[in-house]
Amino acid sequence: MANSAMEIVALLLTAVGLIGAAASTGMPMWRVTAFIGANIIVFETRWEGLWMNCYRQANIRMQCKVYDSLLALSPDLQAARGLMCAAVALAGLGLIVSIMGMQCTSCIKDNDRAKRAVLIAAGCMIILSCLCVLIPVSWTGNVIIRDFYNPLLLDAERRELGEALYIGWVAAAFLFAGGCIFTCCNVQSDDGDSKRRMYSYSRPSGYAAYPPQPLQPQALVMLPQHQPPQPVLSRHPSTNYSYHSSYPSVRSGVAYL
Image (cartoon, rainbow, N blue to C red):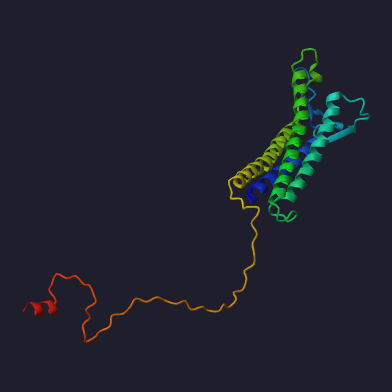
């Protein structure tokens, strides 16, 4: 399982990505007025966002107006609204789920496998949130760049990339990093544990441990011991023995004399 330091880093990255995604969703600076060509009205700036249009005059006064009808919006703007809201919801849910599965929390006790599964699910939700942020931001940026180089449009109708798009790209990068840390580290740990279980010793299924029984005193039985016969010394020599020796005996010497 990933250590606590990596989990905390992934949690911080996800939190920063969530804040960036929420800020990009609410900011009106998706499309900004481009001051090019004959457009010399530089004291008035127009911002177009997902929810409203804003005009700012001489950096002093700003007026914003919310879109009147959702159905009157362009398809890319409608899709961007839904995807950005889904991204914020998924990132928030993934952040909460990841906190439940971290080692420093006690939500799931004594079950490392369940913690890994929770962190992998949280990482998948965070990566999905990254995709939901990246699609509308990149789509809007592509439309702005395409219209900017369109010769049929007037200079006053051209727009530039706003600050909200850059914040969205950075937030997507943070969400992707946090989701990858949550997912990849725990998947590798799960594979290592399965290999360890594969090569580990498996106890026989028929094995049963019995409690030790107290020893009972038993009667001692004396077994007869066979001892070799001991030599007995006698003053009268015995003649009924057979002993071959290279030296002549005393009796034979006397008889020879």
